[in-house]
Image 1 (cartoon, rainbow, N blue to C red):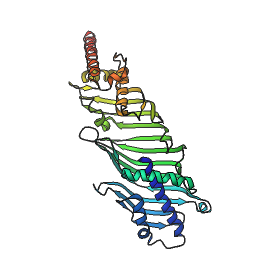
Image 2 (spheres, helix red, strand yellow; image 1 turned 45 degrees about the vertical axis):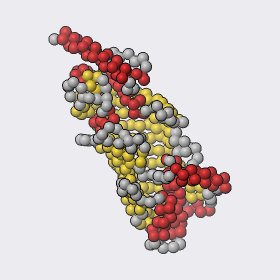
Image 3 (cartoon, helix red, strand yellow; image 1 turned 60 degrees about the vertical axis):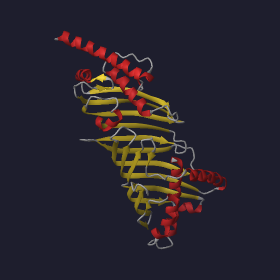
Image 4 (tube, rainbow, N blue to C red; image 1 turned 180 degrees about the vertical axis):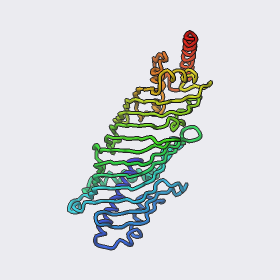
Length: 381
């Protein structure tokens, strides 16, 4: 689905480029009226385009919106798209775009309760997908023309993501001030490493944290190697994801994280370090990752403002039994306990992945540690 959506958008870019070339010879006042039916056929219903003008060096497209025809949910809205083509590509059998710039776009997408991602990409019926895939295979045999894009940039964008798969209420994550760049895109898709870079801010309750990502991605295979850096994002921003594992109330705190993420053939390998800073937990009867809140409060006071937690997330994302979220939370719990000095013996990490037996064993071990901690505290008095 994702690959077919990319192909359709590349075809759309090709149409824009053809219009740009034609704009040097004809007036463009009626460009929208002329091209809209073709765009609608390529993209589908719900796509709106308000204005197209040919400038000296680029094609300007304004008022692009994409709205789901059934739910009327708006998935995409952008201030302007600028396409800078290479006119020398006319001498070759290649549509060459030097730069494709998207100014101030707003994206919205969500994950359904069934785990399906829905957003501003083209959705099609199964039979249409199969028909297009088969046609494309025939096309590529005699096809000589190509689309080449040197660079795609997003400037000052925003992303709203709603995750309905977690327990009610759903999770809401918002990225703003988003700058994104990917280079060396070709169609038909070829197996190559396209450099990518992303910078943005994530909104919390009281402050904004920052996210940066840099590396490369193979658009055809979706393999990638990237370095991810997160700074000063509030812990409670991710509360919907740890809600099942935390019955005590986390008052405040924020996190830094560094990780090198490698995906090869759907297998992920992501070592990194999480730094919990000024974590404040209400003392009571609840638990934080099976650690009694009273115990955790005392340990945090001893450890100081920084709790550094190394982790390594590995697994096959093509395996239905592999859960990336659970794998990450499991790693965080194990190494959080180690960082706090809790003597938990980890024989098999799968015991921590939500099985009743594993949870009971952990709770009993932590309770015994809490009693030991109390005795040491009484001796000091």
